[in-house]
Length: 443
Image (cartoon, helix red, strand yellow):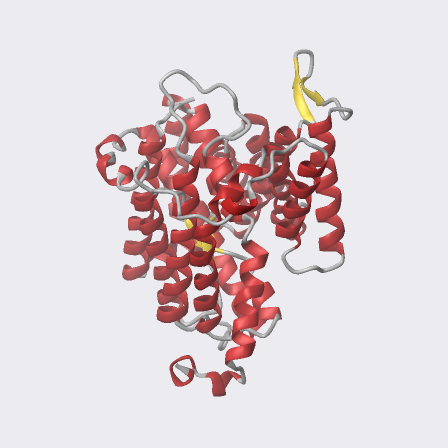
């Protein structure tokens, strides 16, 4: 085992890699509870006619299985200390845009995730990924990531009751004297303090403390101590739904959905891989060794996750926490996979994870995702316009896809009239046509 993962070459040990794997798990364990709550639309009391709610228990199991599989493949096959799990942002797009807003059945949405994963595998094997990555301007990539962060934070503020519907102004400040809203505010404050103190796993611990506070004041019903550990919930309600509904994806609307899944995962993965590898000192001549294997691991996890019953699985930037603890090899990810499998037996804790408990995690993750705003070239008008509209449109239209579409429409337009058409890759014109059709026929 030591020889396979090259412990001596990287100057590491079983103890160091184990601690790193545990650190990574604690840093991203919140997804075990946030993802099921998000996909099951917890906090949304009324669904559109004909739209059903995905089984929360099944999604919990699917989340843990997809994460464990992704971590294991990344660790053993790609040999990187990078953990995977269903991605934040993509799960919000799945639940709030595709299912809630577009009224697409969750089964069909899972089929879209499956197809996006399969396309990602083809792009990885054929080497087309580099061409596509180079075709999309860096500024737009950063704008999309930041916009998703703002969108997630907006959802968190709604779940907390801090932002509410207002007939005069569309949105307004909620009643901060409400006990449930105060609980969410407490959670935000605690999580911010923990992260300010550089506590690894601060988001997870913030959720734990918020849930405990809710139990103490009587807002959350505590689980019976004897029932905290149980067999994993069945995945029967979601398992295979993606495969059986593949025939429902052949519409322009689903094409846009699949492109959005693919686009966000594509660049989120690439950015995470480079960031983690850089921190770990694994880059060689500014290139990522075994990049194909790492990207394949990511896409394979998406396919497995979709079949089991969850939204897109992707590489997690929280892996940097494990690298900071000394993780340098794939064994770190193998350890993280083990903890996700162990977590399968703690599903009864889902009962204490209310919308007020998950809201602080959504808001803080949104903050972290928005940090790339500083890297956008705001001084260039032809870039500022599409970037700003991308970021603004996501929360205001309640749609990640719409934000991306607006940005990809305005980017060629501003550059053409700035006489900078030479900066636009031909692929961008193809995307321009696709998103123009999106607005003509679907909006």
